[in-house]
Length: 205
Image 1 (cartoon, helix red, strand yellow):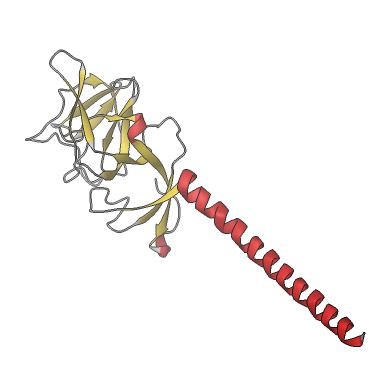
Image 2 (image 1 turned 90 degrees about the vertical axis):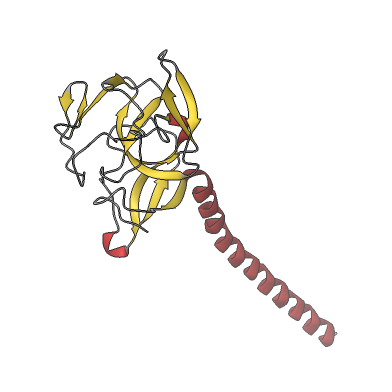
């Protein structure tokens, strides 16, 4: 009888240990599962490649990007899918052209319904006739000698955005035929924070 009691006590202890381990594993897995969901459907991490967003962003910066679909605003820094470029035909209709076939980080300069003009003589961007004070830019704004996508001024169609890099001299952006207008559905996310380097951790403007 005593041996049976001891065996029973050991079984209860083993079951208790197993139960505690299951509880610990479950408690650890829940936040991991939630993080996986968040970084699959809500957030992503993007890595800046190149210097087209200087001085705001530098090569190899790590960015936290929100993938929640919201209407873009001028001034937003976004990650876009530049697989295709949208341009105007001579008739004024839109058509799809060959893009860069990669994702790029740029700033939204104009949104649907806004009239955009770029004065190479002044190096200034105009939105709805008003000169923009773009304090975040590295250089003045010029139009490309080759590969110019548009005749200015023009009104950005609804559902599209016009984007440029902050380092205007070297940025390959909506001014060029292989980027052009960006459909809002091709915006992969809006930059929320810089995660790396750690000394620059925080929001970006």
